Image (cartoon, rainbow, N blue to C red; front, side, top):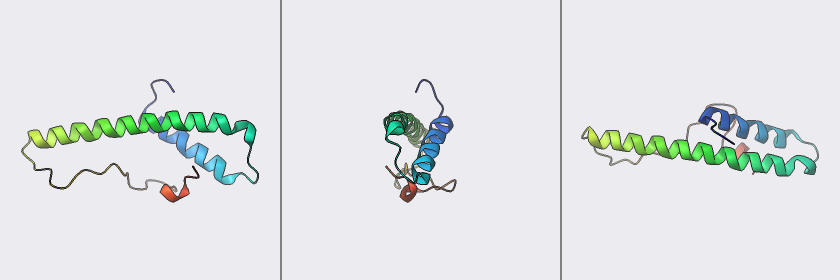
Length: 88
């Protein structure tokens, strides 16, 4: 997954989750591709979330705002999916 944005990578995860959720029978022929693409997309999302979190922490500490409450990396559900919907 080369140079994808968070939004693109998250879209890949959503599409693959929907595909797996809607299958009546597992499609073993596509499973390796789905898992490989999903892992790569997850890494892109995780890297972007970590980078944004670090930048926010740096900006807040530079502004003299105390970081007593840690920033969370759990995005609020922004669509029809939540953590319980992801089948992998």
